Amino acid sequence: MPELPEVETFKRYIERTSLGRRVVKAEVKNAVVVRGADASAIVAAVEGSELRSALRHGKQLFLELSRGGWLTWHFGMTGEPVFFERPEDEPRFDRFLLTFEQGFLAFNDPRMLGRIGLVSSPNELIERKRLGPDALSITEADFVRAFSAARGSTKAALMDQHRLAGVGNIYADEVLFQCRLDPRAEVRSLSDAELRCMHRTMRRVLRKSIEVGTDFDRLPRTYLLHYRRRGAPCPKCGGTMETVTVGGRTSYFCPACQGGK
DNA sequence: TTTCATGTTCAGCA
DNA sequence: GTGCTGAACATGAA
Image (cartoon, rainbow, N blue to C red; front, side, top):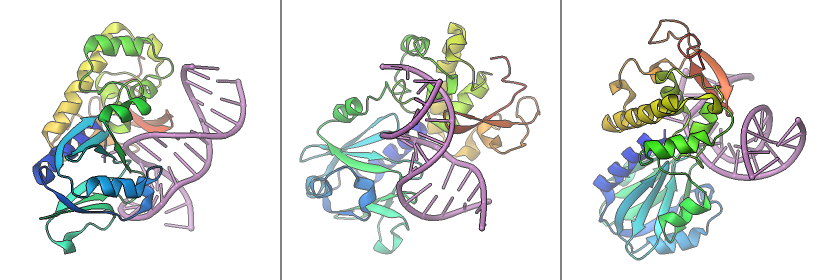
């Protein structure tokens, strides 16, 4: 589920349910989610700590530990945090579990493409992964500058986490649809006005999704994301949505509305 | 049974 | 170095 709006929603959920709670036990339920990290060091850093604050950068979530360090959560394609009170409510695909004095917080992730780690500061991870600025923090001027220097397809540039952190397949398609830009268009061919449209639209879409708690049913019916099916009608012109692979991902677009560039 | 999936990373090639 | 493609990761759902 997780692109920027989903991770922001997860952050607020964790703040609401788990902040200020002391971890009495941390369990790695499946080693895959801590692959590349020292599992025992993570457990040792978390146990006895309170979750002091939460911070998000792009699709990456950071949980501050009162005894020092930050737990990093990346949700991959299918990860989500689940807080529950009774042990029998533990979710089916729990891969990492925090036990508080009261209640539990699970990292639930069927496909196990998510990752948990430990860093001394959020910046450490942002720099190591060379993540670009957060999609909701970047200014219009910086956005235009970053995309003026980009090469290749517009959609690939929008999804490149090194350029801009937080936009994935669904929201990239949405932004391009609302700006009437072909996902395959050379990003070099875009005008400043088109780049500004992307920035403005991206902010509006991400904020709107956060506002409704990423419940797609509460997003406008004019959004492309309701029509991500082969042969579905375009919500703008009634034409037929088509798919094309860009940046290794399936892109839904309306050739009639997004044909110009 | 087969195909696809809101992500990241890496090898191979131009 | 840059960009693109395909595959790997691992598993549920349609």
